[in-house]
Every structure is written in structure tokens, then in C-alpha cells.
Image 1: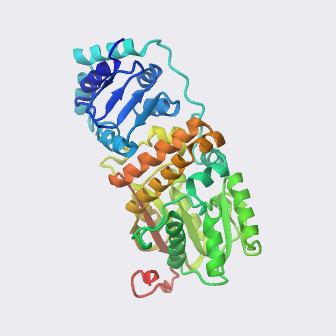
Image 2 (image 1 turned 45 degrees about the vertical axis):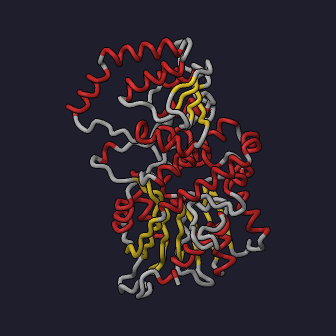
Image 3 (image 1 turned 90 degrees about the vertical axis):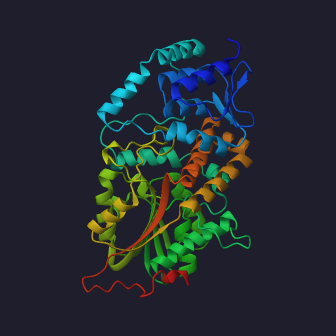
Amino acid sequence: MADAAGRLTQLAKEVLGAPLPVRIRAWDRSESGPPGAPTLVIRNRRALRRLLFKPGELGLARAWVAGDLDIEGDLYQALDLLAEMIWERPAPADKPQRAAALRALARPEIRAAAKELLSLAGAPLPPSPPAEEAGRRRGRLHTLLSDRAAISHHYDVGNDFYELVLGPSMVYSCAYWGTGEDGVGTLEDAQRDKLDLICRKLGLTEGQRLLDVGCGWGSMVLHAAREYGVRAVGITLSEEQAAYARKRIADAGLADRVEIRVQDYREVHDEPFDAISSIGMAEHVGQARYAQYARTLYALLRPGGRLLNHQIARRPLADEEAYRVDEFIDRYVFPDGELAPVGRTVGALEDAGFEVRDVEALREHYALTLRQWVANLEKHWDRAARLTSPGRARVWRLYMAASAVSFERNRIGINQVLAVRTPESGASGMSLRARAWQG
């Protein structure tokens, strides 16, 4: 079993058709690969069994979460180097290409590589998935019950844990950077500026009624009530978030103006609202429910009311039917979450009756935000692992770092879409000057 790293490096080159851009250190302390590059640490042969029984992203994710794999060196650099080879490899688009790919896998050298990998992996039994993995769902997606379970998996991991990662703002969405003396500012500054930007886009004024869909820990409704004098309702499906938000509101002396409910957006029936904010929530809605989501929010607004939809978007595909959620994200991070191109989001809002007035892309802002969250997690690593589990902390580190790289590589984006329920008279209430909220 000597020089396991060298053997693995050669096998990877044969299977992938190109040398690995990172070094490998194996369980026998052997190393191989480009000097000075980040090092993929394979702590045990169980990692190989995970890859053999679940080739691709899910096997890698399970090995990472279980601690069978690690990265030494710059994690972002490693993910950037591996992205094109693993996550961004184009899938065969048609039957002839798929047939050619299958023939390639049947080549003698590939069969020999698979046999060699089996020998290196040791015992043949597949390892059990890490405990942090969400169970496979059965039945219809995005029912009231299934959405509550999916939200609980992601958000009910402890408010103390989120405080470590998000910082005092407790805002779990893309910040808005660029106003500090250094041209960037602090995370707290950037999150406050994001909330204020949304309030200005919505044109909030004292006495208006705001609905915040997916209110999280209450930061948006707190800011809107304190700074703009609105009456606000925040809804979430997380009991832990709701309890935390209610305490913050009581401590701020705003309980008479802000209400927090554990409620689905489909269960809100006390319209009309003057404005609706939906910040980082629509990714949970699902493609099959998005038209209903848009129609529901439209019906909850008064004529002339505004919606600010802040949502991650993926790039459009030549074959949209081929879209699949990343397995790591689906199993460990956001069960049942789905991303759509921004054009589809705009189209669904328009189909529901909205007039879309502005779309602002904030892709680079989210990469900066995620890097700040990763830094917070790494700074408080031991406590974060105690508050949840070492596996859950590893999930978050990989998810946030990989997401930052995805934003930086323009694989995904994020957009604020401002839409109005324009009345029949056509009076939108918007300024004649574009983006008047910028001052």
C-alpha cells in the first residue's frame, strides 16, 4: 500500500483525462501532485469507498462532512482549481455524446483504474451517510408540511450557532458593500445598508404596513419599524427564528408595531399590505410553486403596493429540463431548494400581474458576504462545532466557501427585483427618475 497518493494521482488523471490541480496526501502519509498547490488530505480509505459507492458530488460531500477528506492551504483556491474539473464538467448533451461517454468509461485503462481504486479502498461495504444528511423525501414537494421540514433542517440548528456565523446583524442574505472609508466597510455596515436600500426601494413611510416573507431573525422588520415607522408582520417557518425575533423586538420596545408569526406565505389572509419584502426566501419556493408564490404576493398587496424580491439565480441552460439541484446542497444544506434564472423570475412576476420596475444584480456583493461568514465560522470553529456538531460545521464551511467561489466564477448570481401592483389607472407611484432611492 506504499505511495497511495501517487497511485491516486495517476488514477485521477486516467479517469478525468487531466492531472489533478491540487496535491494529494494519503492516509499512509505519502504525497503527490504540484508543489505549492493546496493539498487534498485523504485521511482514510473510507473516503474512497464513499466515492466508489456515490461517485461525484455526493460522495465527495459525504467524505468531507464525515471528516474523511480535508483541505490544507487556501480552501477558496482549492475549490476554484477543482471547480472546472469536477463541478463544471459539461454533461453529454445528446444520445451520441452519452454513448461516447459510456464507451470511454469502458476503455481497458478505465476498467483497470476502477479495479485499482477498489483495491485501494479496502472493505467493500458502503459507509453509512453522515448523520447531518437530510433523509430522502417522499411524496409531493413544497407542500405546507414538507416545506416546514426542509426549513427546520436548515434553520433550526441553534440561534447561538447563527450568531457566530452571521454576527450581530443576524442577517442571513447578501450584504450591500461599498460605503466604508476603505471602500468596503464592515459586515454590520453592509448589512444595515442592504436593509436600508430595500426600505428605500419599497418607498416605506410612517404608518405603512409591511409584510416580510421569510423574516429570519427579524432584522428587516426591526429596521423598517425603527427607521421608517412602519407597522410590520414577519413570517417564518422556523420556531427558533420566531422566538429569537420576538425577543429582539421586545427588547427594542417595538412589540406594539411588529408581529412575528410562524406561518407560511400561503396562510396569510389579513391583506392588504402596502409593501412586501422577500429576502432570500424565494429559493425555497420551488419551480412548481413559483407561479402560486407570485400570485399570492400580488393578492396580498394593495393597488400601488411594492414587492422587493431578493433572490439567488442560476444561469439559464440550453435544456432547462436537464436542471438538477446540486446533491450536496439538496442533502445537506437546503432540502428541496431550487434556483431559477432571473428571467424566469421576472416572467413569473409579470404573469401574476406585477409591473417589474427595476432589477439590480449584486453577485459580487454575495461573494464578499460569504467570505465574511466563513471567516466568522473559522474564528469560532471550536465553539461552532460544540453548538451543533463537527459535521454540521464542516457542512457550513464547505457550503459557504463553495458558494463564494460560484458567485465569483459567475456560475450563480443574485438579484433584487422591484415590482409594483400597478393599479388600472397606470399610476405606479414611482419616481420619473430611475433609481431615485440612490439619492
